[in-house]
Image 1 (cartoon, rainbow, N blue to C red):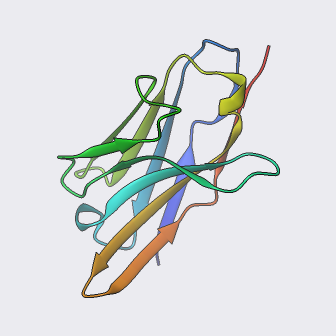
Image 2: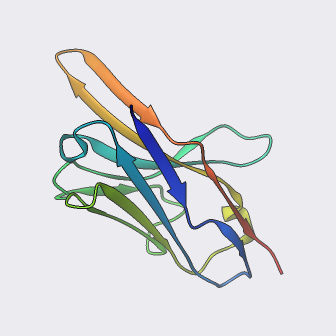
Length: 120
């Protein structure tokens, strides 16, 4: 059974930090690219950060470059998102996504999301 479980969300003051984790099971984690998305109320879900299967390449949304860092530990089947210098506009539900595209087919798994609220 596939499971993708995010944790680490919460309430933080502007300028603060949070570290999100996403633990995966039920599929071969090490061959999947991993992404963090977020969705704020009334807005579309947006890609925040992505990391390739072996961790050799990362990408970030312009809005979080220099503040957020994505990383993964394939031995622990876990991907992380370190968020620093948080702003109120970072408030959203953060989702973890595992994705693999081969031969025109896409395999994708989503977590249930974790709420991040940045407020004083």
